[in-house]
Length: 330
Image 1 (cartoon, rainbow, N blue to C red):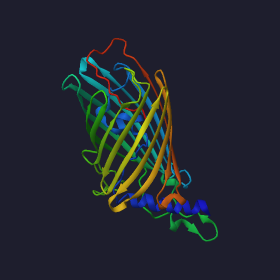
Image 2 (tube, rainbow, N blue to C red):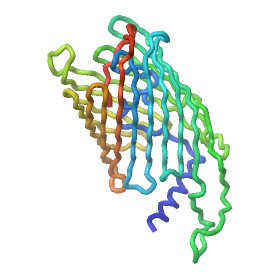
Image 3 (tube, one colour):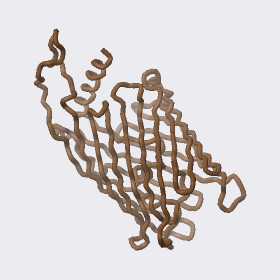
Image 4 (tube, one colour):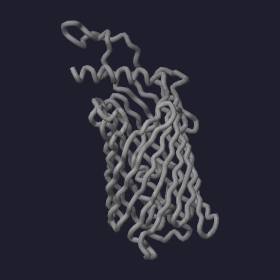
């Protein structure tokens, strides 16, 4: 009976998605998914402009049937001869145990501008191709029910066997000094249509992101071993508005963090309290974060889980024009 209810609920969600606005997936560890957060962060790895590969996995509300799972893999690196960094991002988002699936591949470039000796800016642009599909054979509708045999009848509901493809673009700007960082990004610039039935209103609205923070040394070393980094991220997409505010604490190879997420507007509420434990050794890093729901939805969806891992390598030849971004890894 529980599975039957889940199928019906998911069917209603998927059908309603044909005529409503879609929303992008998000990561709690937003700096562990740098080029997803802001295309201008392409090529900002910590090892003298060398390469960086990052993997991200998020399981949102696993206590619910038909959970939401988002995975991504990204590569980025700085090159002096093109004046900035390049990036490649693969994203896979599954809802309803894979009933609804979105896959995208993105390529980007960020241009580095040295404003003065201390302040640096980067300007990023990203092109994307995406594919969205539904496993129609796993959906169940009312007209399929036989009173004695269950779901055995064919349905008269319309469906399409192929997914829908779309192009998309994003842009961003980033400014930073040795201790300060901040940026703004705009995703879904052309607001692509993702309708399976050609509904012109079924678009993905623009996603606006603003993020900023500080790195504050807690010891007297030239290269501090202990730091605290307060930061904030603000996101707006159609009627969904949220703010993440918190801090990272770094002590040698260990990183911890604590944030609070608040949503505003029509869907405003205190959303979640988020904790992080991370580890960085040489060029390898690993992080785990836990979202504790504090809204009225906590009885049904008490938590979410997220894992990130990454590896960096130094450039074979030093990038003399590269300027390091002092930014959290998670």
